[in-house]
Length: 62
Image 1 (cartoon, rainbow, N blue to C red):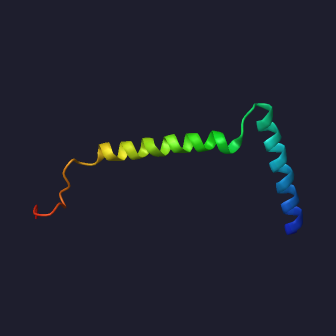
Image 2 (tube, rainbow, N blue to C red):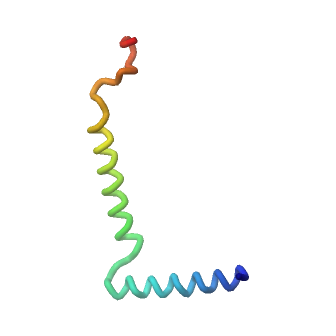
Image 3 (cartoon, rainbow, N blue to C red):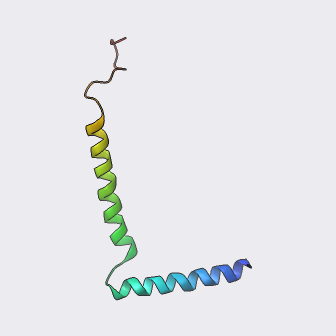
């Protein structure tokens, strides 16, 4: 497929999807940013809970 044709189809599809989200009162970036941020901090919190309190690689343990 020619690149100009591909780009045109992509722009048309993007506009169509933006129109659908506007029908529901959503903005794609706003809804995803909050979810991504909350998920990211939840994963950080989980990772810190999983880690042992004292690392076996701490100085003086070997």
